Length: 232
Image 1 (cartoon, helix red, strand yellow):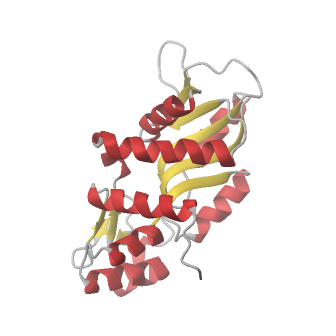
Image 2 (cartoon, rainbow, N blue to C red; image 1 turned 90 degrees about the horizontal axis):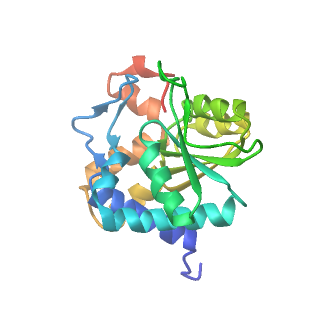
Image 3 (cartoon, rainbow, N blue to C red; image 1 turned 90 degrees about the vertical axis):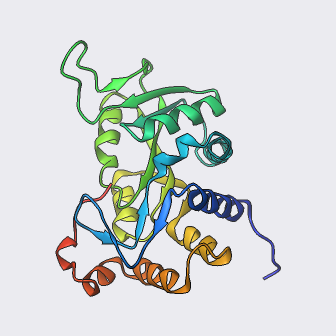
């Protein structure tokens, strides 16, 4: 090792610290968090908090625009997934000077009965789905199906944060024919938390144990019924 850090690694490190500083990521091994799916975890993620920190948000959206520009080719439209993906699609589309739309989870029950809001008139438009985070990627299918049924070419998705610990995430994206892009994963956050001593050693050790085996960790903490629950 020559000590050189790549731009990708630098972006991940900065993103991780911002997530920790804004309390968008919380660690608590003594009182684990329970997700709506029933899964328990010593980690809680709320990327939506970032919208309240304009300077930090601006930096991360600049990184996101750079990543999409370099890795996704010529994108025509950014599509935010309802609801958490909408502000991030708006911020990044402004950075890239690209068109934006958003996709509803279901068609609204009046007016045009639209499930896609905004303008996507050209068939074959290259669209990237934007959301705040990804756990196993199960919820992405709905949005991608809607976009493709409307004639969009969807080959990429972007999230600010990717858990990066659930094998189903990679398989779900492969099944959908999607390449996922993210600024940071839980491993990046754990690395930053260790380096800058955000938490005590016991908490960090518990989180690392969870990252290595999420279901095993939950089993050892008396919550074995949460396995295979749907995530986002």
